[in-house]
Image: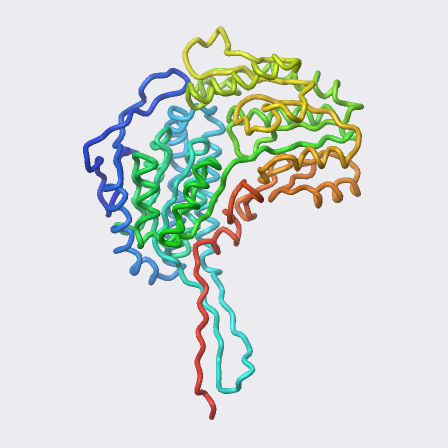
Length: 481
């Protein structure tokens, strides 16, 4: 498939209005993958206005018509999965198998919302007045701005675009400038599947300028944002100007509570796979490992041994299990957190430095830390990197208190064979998603969202569709016979 890798506004592939460009960098080699358009407020405004013009026609289409287009797009994504996954690896660095799986999950999202859009049900309410009829209907809310992060350049846009388009909204997508190629490829697949001009617009450029234009433009009724708490708060402040609706999927600092009754071999193997997926650059990645003191040393030994055996390198190499971090800034931040922890007496069980065998690229060794104290930055801050800090505990209440000791509330994990303990802990955890003996407490058909500073609203599931629908009461009077 021949991809344009440009902005897409009102049905046309185009450069930036001011002629600006941005070099997409391969984080495994530090080489330029290709230049792409890099615009600003003018590009965003043009995209919003195109989406505004396209909205009435798209909203009038039946959910069946809209769903058929999304399903064609999903089928095409599966056909070109190898090709587009290669592009994703080049710009974000994750292993090829993970990138391909991400595209297939994206296709599942479009398929699922194509069907769920047919179930945007309303209801009839019995009235206390005999001459009145009360009906509740659900209608698409309008133009939606979707700002997504670089860690899942296919999955993040797919879950928001699919829900919004299925609901009958039109979309202005703004991917991360670090990984725009994946979103550009996805937009092209959907356009070729039959999306009318203006229904899906794709822009790339200055994040602040484009975000402010989405906030200021009265036609942009909602912004869906995946990213940092800092930027989420800026959007919340700005949304007051036009009362723009927001969905925010922000940071995470997921605790893992490991009780002593588990099969340590099974748990350590799963912990390594889940923790170091996408090099730890996952919002729901297990981060703070709270392990019962009776098994803490054995757990640390097991994960350290496994982490030391992981293979680092380019995601295009079939035997590579861990790729690079997204950029030098993120790599250096992770390195600083580990250095500071070691300086405070934390034991580095494995990793802890840049690999000498990979002088180019933003690599950092998978790292296991034991003897971590709850007041250390490596415990309190979202690492978003390949670092596993281990804290020991004695009592369940102590573990729950430590787990909840964070402003974040996205995902949490519990490993135990004690049913009563699992229920007690899961109900006490202040997180939007809890996995019990499970490393993936989420799914296309299930709501994805956080508590506290981890965000507002939900993606996926029926809740994800509802985020893009307005509720209207229609009251008809004067019906007495």
